[in-house]
Structures are given as C-alpha cells and as structure tokens.
Image (cartoon, rainbow, N blue to C red; front, top):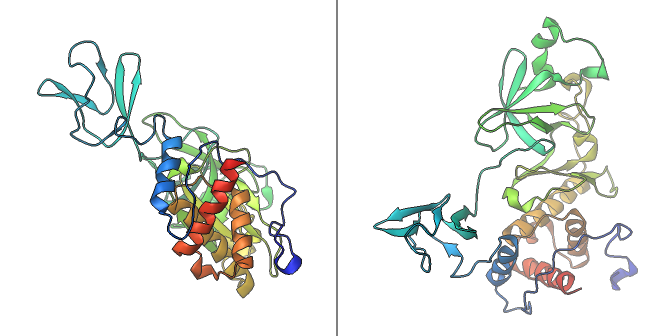
Length: 331
C-alpha cells in the first residue's frame, strides 16, 4: 500500500501476484540506468544459455570450438561453408549431444490445440470464415463451430450460411480457441463459449508471442470504474486486446442485437483503457512477460505517481517499472 492519499496502490491485492522469475540482474535502477541492460538480462533468462558471445550467433558466424568432421550433426540454422560449421540465421546456439542448431529469436506463431488466439476475418466463404492469426497459414472457423444467436442447438441450414456476415464480417476481430492444428495444414478454430466472439471498442496490441505465456486464464477483468469494467484478452499468437468488458463478452450475438458497434464509452473508461494499453506497451519495450496482475499494479501506481496515459510511454515511467520488477525479482 502507498501512503499517498491513504489509498492502497493495488486494489486486487488479495489475488496472488505471479513471480517474475529468479533472475538476478545485479543492477540498481536510477536516473542514469540504461534500459537495455535490464532487457538483455531478461532475454538471457528467457533463452537458454543467455545472450553471450559464446551462444549468440549472427548469419555468417563460424561455430568456433566445434570440429568440421563427423563429430557433430548439422541442425536447423547450421551449414557447412568452406569446410567450417557456419550459422546462417540470427539466434541462440544450442547443442543436444552431437546435434548443433541455431534457435531463432523471433519465429512465427505455431498454433497448438487449446491456444487462445485473436484473429481478423479476411474472407467469408460458403460455410466458414478465414482468419489471419499471425501464423504461416490462415485459420478456418466453420459455421458449425460457432453458437447461433440465442444459443440455438440445431443443424445449420442454407439460411444460416446466407446470414454468416451478420455474425462476423470481413475485417472483424475475433477471439477464439484452437480446436485442431496439424503441421502443414490450416488451423481449425471454434467459439463455442460465451467468452469468445467479436472484439470492438478497444485497443489491439501486437507483441512478440514469446512474451505471452501459457496460463490457465487468458481473460482478465479489472475492477469496475465509472462507466463499466475493462477486460484484458491475452492471445497466444502475440495479440493483446484491451477493451470494455461488456463488449468483449458480447460473444456470438448478431450485430443487430448488440450495441457493441454503436454505444459510446465514457471518457473515464476510454482513459482507463489507454492507461492499461500503454502499460502493456511498456512491458513489451522492456521484453517483460505479460503478467496481468503486475500490469494492473503498474497502471494503478501510474495514477498515484501522477502520470497521464500519454506519459506512461516515457523513459521516466519505464525506469520506475524496472525498479518495481527488480524488487519483485529480489523477493
């Protein structure tokens, strides 16, 4: 709790705050601290072996210390150039027995069954929607995998196919779950749950998928403010949506039956959405894993520290976030 104003800085203190890890950065964050030092320390924990001169490889680097004979096997990202083992991509060098490979730092999202994703409708076909989920292949959402308006349980008819655009139209943003995914084949999605559906009246943030960890709950509703509540949707494909809770939970309801496209949000609620969204962007700039509890705490502290939503992205606030993260690491 903060002594300022006699109000607690974390209104959801009863919830357990997840640990940020056991990495010890060994730095004191102050006015002269460099943000890049802390970012490299966090990346070193995230990638096995760390970002050191002995593990990090750029395209064209030779793998010194490894013979060019048959003692080692070439894996992904490693090839022979003029009789020497050479890396042909930027990443972390890994060794598994006699196998050498370079794991890239940034890769495209590989969907797995059960992942919560956010996608944008690119095409409406005869009986399914095509969605872009930031993967190598587009995903398919079949008409049979969505709930009809009113949650009717019946067979889909030709009339339902004609009214597909009343559910989801082109360029609509949708939250869904991966039903099945096979290598080299399109991903199949479903929205058979009220928490999934069309997303609007909020901010969409695109980050590195590695910063979104697999957790039990990917939908977080923050405490009520004047005009409604704010919900945070963490998608495994690196897309984060921050918007009004009533809109996020609209689900598979026909557009004509919901006010999600026409109702106006209060000014306080819009500022609240911007504050949380900018806090998420700060965590992304610092390469910190997205932790909803700490995101909420930092957004609340930004109010007590006197930061406007537009000032959260400044280096001053980033240094304060680093100070808090170092304290959590040292606990």
